[in-house]
Image 1 (cartoon, rainbow, N blue to C red):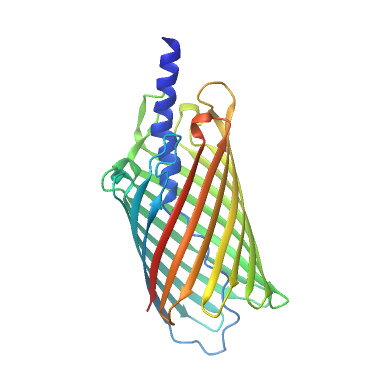
Image 2 (image 1 turned 60 degrees about the vertical axis):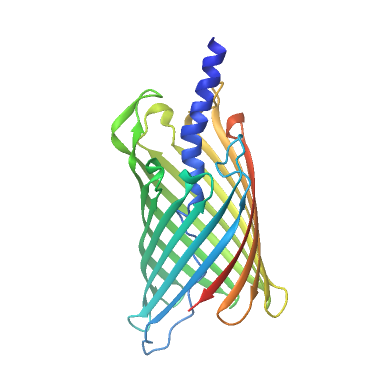
Length: 334
């Protein structure tokens, strides 16, 4: 009887907590910086710059819930992005980015979601570097699973500098509050809930270096350290430290054909959360590989083919999974 209860408790932990934390992370709650800023502006402020693009994607995901119980599904995705830049002076620039992302699954409909993401910031060009600061907001909405809804507020500051006209560096710091608007936080017991919503506080520091190794080849390395503290009390279930390293490259294969690829490794160490059967603290190792082929039809239109492989290795058997995704799409820039 005791063994049956242990198995049921394991499945409960996997279905509620692991899926909630990992699956919902598929939503781009943290958009990586889109590259380094432009070089020094002319002495006279330029007019504002406004651009936008629409991306239509379709594909197949072999493990939508990212669990040992594999469930595949087809999906469609619509993304609209808008970028606005306005020089205030010859050195000070205002920037606003907005993204609207709709992801729809055919069968696993409770994971279909809408994401509104905006980023507002200013940066100033100094003699040796560019320093910027701003505010980042992500709003995730799950029409068929309100427990996944959240607001993610982040404040950020960064410094960019250039060496040898081809090597770019960035140091960035972030402080975030992730508020699950319809999900009450865990209490002192696994089945107990507090009267307040789950709130995560996250502090991150990152460093990036990128370089043109050849006119057609750009290589970048990024590393990021994060500390996440949640108001959940049961085993400090969402408290962890993570270390993430990413290597990416962009290579121009032909005149209009580009290869974009990246590989990342994330080590996640939980503060008090233990494995399902045992007393050891949980430790996860997440490997993600992406490769894209981008073909430009003309100055406005592009075709995209993407392959993604994701694998999580953990000392908790129920937290291990692998996933393959194939995506194709079309993009139009205005």
